[in-house]
Image (cartoon, rainbow, N blue to C red; front, side, top):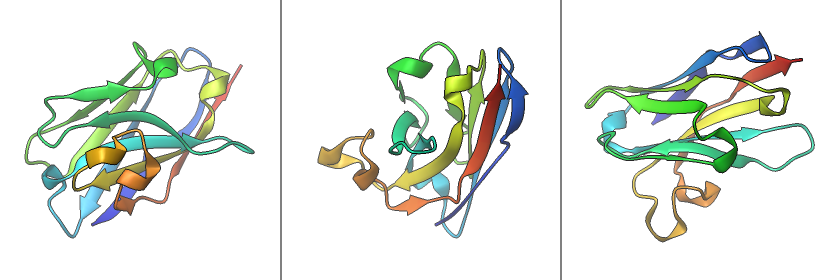
Length: 125
């Protein structure tokens, strides 16, 4: 699976951005999809994830109520709507796909088999 993340940019605090993760090579609906982010000098961290059919979604505490991950069943794109953005949301955002997060869990980087190249989101105050 080749993943392409897009939609990042520069936005004012309180603004919104919609990220897209498009897949080629395989059908993305066969994969659990997650978004992670990495700020300068920090480790990559879990942001959100969505199950194969979109029936279950998961969020890190800092983004609950502000970010929404979604997908169309059988589609090849996953989106993440990011609202009420804060400067601390500034990071390089990556999407990733997992056949089955299994025992490692959807929050674990090691659970994912494929990664996109990342898209930068910068939130200015």
